Length: 238
Ligand SMILES: Nc1ncnc2c1ncn2[C@@H]1O[C@H](COP(=O)(O)OP(=O)(O)O)[C@@H](O)[C@H]1O
Ligand SMILES: [Mg+2]
Image (tube, rainbow, N blue to C red; front, side, top):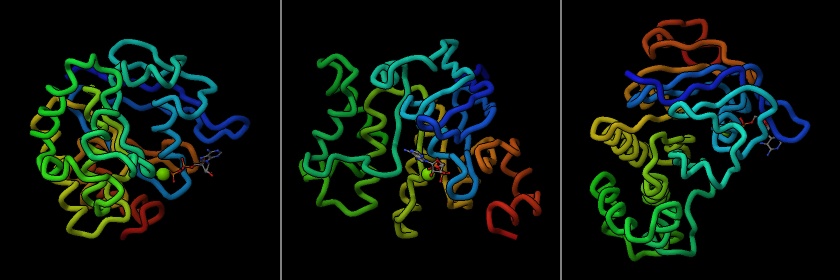
């Protein structure tokens, strides 16, 4: 498998606030990689720094052989990164269809319709509420729309920040099923932050444990699961 993303010795944060220390991470083509860790450990900041929404102090972010750590945030989408943010990930006053179109701002106008059809074939439930105003949808429906919108830019790499947070068990299972299906059907690579470890272990090929801004473990999900000390200390499970 060829490598899609390599993060090397990354130090990042916000202004004078240093959040991430010497982070190294790799994600191959078609791989789903999880970042887990306690609240406040810097998981969101890590995705933000890849998407250039946090400040990179030093280190490299290489996507498909190209260094992007100095690129402006508005160009990152064009390099092939889609981002499902934890909060504020839909425009509530716009219709679902408009939300999807907003996600495709980097595509030439004539490709938007074709891409929307592709995305709707992957995230099927969204089709029935295309004309609804996004703000009137349930949490689970809104998350599906946000996922679809993040796919509109034709990403090579999809960043997912807690896609099931705040959802009911049924809605969480639906989102997990969509993400799993997406992984199986496309050659998309993903970085996933997911608190629901059962869902996470079912989807990902590799996981990283981030604690206080430092990666303290990387390996197969089974390796992490069988390390009772790490699981108990940092993930609240025995
Ligand atoms: N916009 C911001 N400006 C300054 N500090 C921030 C900002 N966002 C997050 N932080 C700080 O960065 C640290 C990591 O936060 P975050 O990346 O959100 O952690 P996680 O996603 O793992 O819960 C926290 O100490 C948080 O207070
Ligand atoms: Mg977070």
